[in-house]
Length: 467
Ligand SMILES: Cc1cc2nc3c(=O)[nH]c(=O)nc-3n(C[C@H](O)[C@H](O)[C@H](O)COP(=O)(O)OP(=O)(O)OC[C@H]3O[C@@H](n4cnc5c(N)ncnc54)[C@H](O)[C@@H]3O)c2cc1C
Image 1 (cartoon, rainbow, N blue to C red):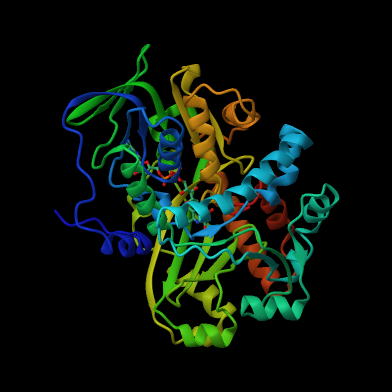
Image 2 (tube, rainbow, N blue to C red; image 1 turned 180 degrees about the vertical axis):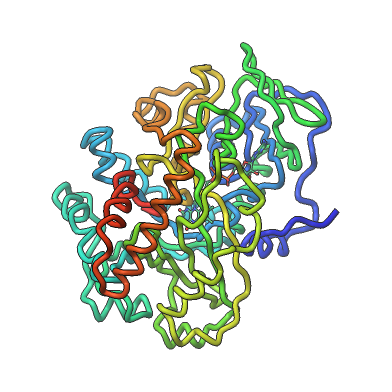
C-alpha cells in the first residue's frame, strides 16, 4: 500500500520523530474516558483531564494518526475570538462575550507556555496579528468591532499608520491595518505531534489506525473499532469535519469548506528584504480571506479560505490532496509579493474547515446523553480556541460546575444551514458571486448589483474563515 500523502507541516513533524506513530486497538478494553479523534481538541481534552485527574484511564482512538486532520495541516495562525465580539454579544450577552474574548486571549499565552514547559518545539512566535484591508472596499470593515472592544475595555488592537502596515506586512497591497500583539503563528504539525507525545507521557493511551465504526449509546457507551472496542464511562467526540457524516443530526450545523494553502521553498534573504523577519499572522478582510505568514525556516506560507465545498458534508479525497486552487493561490502570492515570483514552491495542500452559521464552535452532549460529549465548528479559527475546547470538554467530562459548563457555548449548535441539495447549489452560487465581487473590488470597479446581493448572504452568516 502506498504511504498516505501527508500535508507539509505533518510530514515535516513526522520526519523528526522516531518511526513508530502508535498502534491500533486489537482488544476489548475498558476506560474511564474514551476520546475519539486525535487532533488539537481531543489532545487538549486528554491532557487537561490527566492534569486534573492523573488517576483517570484516558484513551484516544484515532482513525489515522494524531494530526492527520485539520490540526496537522492548518495555517498555524494563532488567533483569538476578539473579532467575533458582536456575534458573541448578540448570542450570549455582554458579560459572556467579554469572558470568551478574554479566555481566547489567555489561550494564546497558555499554548506558548505549555510548549515551553513540555519541550514542544512548535516554532511558536507570539509576534501578533495584523488584520488589513487589501482593497478599498475592505477599508474600515473592522473598525466598528474594534471600536466597541475599545469601549468595553477589551481591546488589544491598535490601528497602525499605513507605512508601518505595509513595511511590516511586506506588501504595498495593504491599504490599512490593525495590529494586536495577542496572537502569532506556529508550526501546527509539530504542535499536534508534541501534544500527542505529552499526552502519552501523562499516561494517555493513544490508538492510531483505529477508526470508530459505531458508537453504542447505552447507559455505558461503547466505541466500536475494526479489531476492538472501548467500553468507557465517558466518551468525547472530537471529530471536527468528520462529525456530520458520522452523526447526521449535525448535517445542517456546519458546512465543510476548504482552506487551501501553499508554501515556498526557504527564501530567508528575500523575506528579510521584504521586512518579513517575524512570525506575525497577516490576514486581509475579504470574505474569502487571504492569510499569510513566514515560517521559522524562512518560507512564506499563504492560504485562502472558501474554495471547495463538500456535498452533504462528505469528507472526500479532494480534501487530502495538493490544492486544486494552486493557480489562484499563486496569483495572490505574486500579487502581494511580486519579488517572490521566482521563488519555487515547496508544496500546496488543502483541508476541510467546519464552518458554522455563527462562525463560533459549539459543544454539547450527543442526543442529551450525559456521558457522551462533543465539540466542533471552529470555522477556520481553531488553533487557539481548541485549547478552550479542551477546557470545555474536560469540564463536561468531570461534571464540574464552572463558567464553561454554564456557558451557552455548551448548548449545542447555534444555527442551521439549508438542507441539500439546496445548500450545495446555494454555496456555489454565492461563492462565485463573492469571487466576482472581490475581483471587481481588487480592480477598483463597482461589483454587479446581483453579485453584491448574493455575497451579502455569506456576510450574513459571517466570514468564511478566520475571525
Ligand atoms: C487547511 C486549513 C487551514 C486552517 N488554518 C487555520 C489557521 O491558520 N488558524 C486557525 O486558528 N485555524 C485554522 N484552521 C482550523 C483548525 O485547524 C481546526 O479548527 C482545528 O485543527 C480543529 O481541531 P480538531 O481537533 O477539532 O479537529 P481535527 O484536527 O480535524 O481532528 C479530528 C480527528 O478525528 C479523526 N477522525 C475522523 N474520523 C474518525 C473516526 N471515525 N474515528 C476516530 N478518529 C476519527 C481525524 O483523523 C482527525 O485526526 C484551518 C483548518 C484547515 C483545514
